[in-house]
Amino acid sequence: MMKIDIISAVPDLLFSPLNFSIVKRARESDLVQINIIDLRDYSLNRYGQIDDYQFGGGAGMVLMVEPLFNCISELKKSNQYNHLIYLTPDGEKFDQKHANCLSMSENLLLICGHYKGIDERIRDNFVTMELSIGDYVLSGGELAAAVLIDSIVRLIPGVLTDIESALTDSFQDNLLSPPVYSRPAEFNGWKVPEILLSGHEEKIREWRLEQSLKRTEQRRPDLLKDFDSL
Ligand code: ADE
Image 1 (cartoon, rainbow, N blue to C red):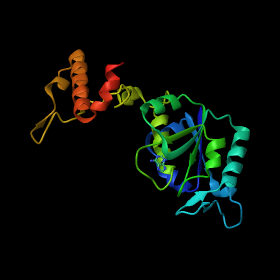
Image 2: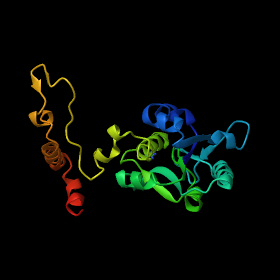
Image 3: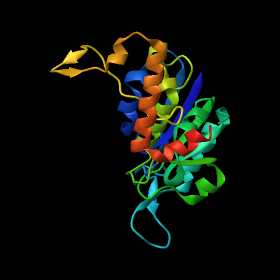
Image 4: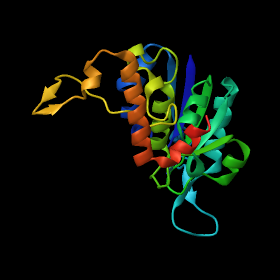
């Protein structure tokens, strides 16, 4: 079973993304174990301090080196992590390839920053991978961690049923997904494309590929460069 530990200063932020839908089902089926570690349990004093002003001045607090050091050191005693991942806007841009690769891990540790981030010495001495979910700044790494976990967990074998198969997701082959329709075949005068009702599997496959290509060309031509080189 895959095990994911997350260190967070605001663990409540992680609750709902990890307790519903597919991630919930994966946890209940013991396909993934997710542990949230509250950094405040490692605070230095009875005020629960885990952050401090940055040396050299400047706005914003920094998560201190010592609580993180103590927390990570304790976790490492009983875990052999494949990766220690720090979520940060200056990390490598996370995409489906990272998700595919990380879904084969056995044990991951995710570190969520808050405020201005974490003391650089933790990054220098512990972190093995730094990931950003996009070019914008979040208040902390928790929502980014939730995005990462959701995208990874759905790729673990057995988590999705055949019907939900991740293989046909957008990006899985570097193309966007084709349009999808469900019953009724006609609503309000709006019709479902005839071909999808034909039962002709080969033709439907062709149509879907065409639509995927068309959609990708229109919306994300940058993806086609990779597709061409496959
Ligand atoms: N923490 C703050 N902003 C972030 C981002 N865009 N990606 C990952 N972690 C973050």
